[in-house]
Length: 273
Image (cartoon, rainbow, N blue to C red; front, side):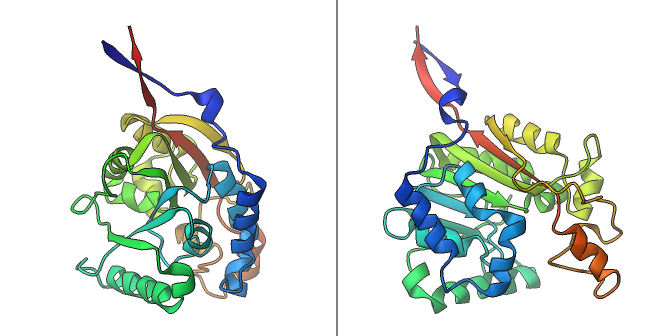
């Protein structure tokens, strides 16, 4: 007996359909008082409801969030998954040897500890590929998500390790959801990643090399006003405003970056004669 890998793209490309209750729980999380006005203001750029729905989020899933940073998406995911699912936050860890990473991790852990009513069931794991690249037991997650973090992996040559780890932790039929600042087609990822951008073809190629199948592409987070040619890279734009008050209104008018939104499937092995 041999095995063939099938994508089931027609069935799974849009993710599992959300029930009205699931959509309601997502909306309730977005409207929760725990989210600051500043974080809510970014919904118009990040489209969290549409993005997570596109990825097929359900309240009963085991979800791995890669490099959650300050926890912007954690604020949404944790309440949705708290009762029936599980959220695993793959953060830097304490022993990184890099000061800003350690500070980021400790700040994130403190954020969770301050609201046990929301975050007490979030599992935080140390994630620093390639040295610490495991995202959990093989075949244990339904969904892996990463938001605007792949440029760092490409720059540090750890992207292949990430995709391999994501493929391993997902169940057959599981989903990898990617949102990433998008470079111009045909550009050199080694150069654009220094500015925070990665070509879409590079992301797709890395995922396919790890065994994933691309089943969905969305322009939910696209921004055609983003020229992608700033001296200080994507961090010139909001919310970073790396140039301070210089041309601030110009960059505010552009808005946050142009982003690809991609859905990948870990194929299901099906026996074949």
